[in-house]
Image 1 (tube, rainbow, N blue to C red):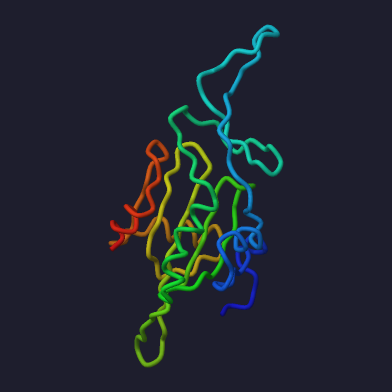
Image 2: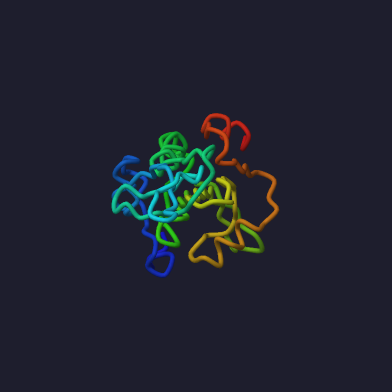
Length: 184
């Protein structure tokens, strides 16, 4: 396993023998996102603007302002997504963390099968779950050969045109079984 802390200190390696709740705690992601009404103060009067704020439960920090039909996916749901794969022995949790003060949460699992190219050049594969708590961004679950270690490699991985990936809008309820079926 890679020994240096990923994400330039913004992520942590997450052992696969921990429960999803323990993984969340170890990665500092054991908080929820609450959708609360957003208001504007006009001439001393608070007026509901018809949008909602996404607030982090750990410190009430507002992460983003979103439309009322936004459906937040909680961090524990992202970690639970990997539980079945890890329990079956197909993958092991690798790293997890957040960027932009929690606006983007990610988990990365290493697939246990790899292959060699050109006499010993090993190619690994990962399953990446990116869960943005930010207006205008979709949930992204994909297989990638990129070991994401910084914002640049996350951007590279998310910009790749890969065959096995699923993007889900926050305007629909997240269905893990459906995403797994779409991934194959």
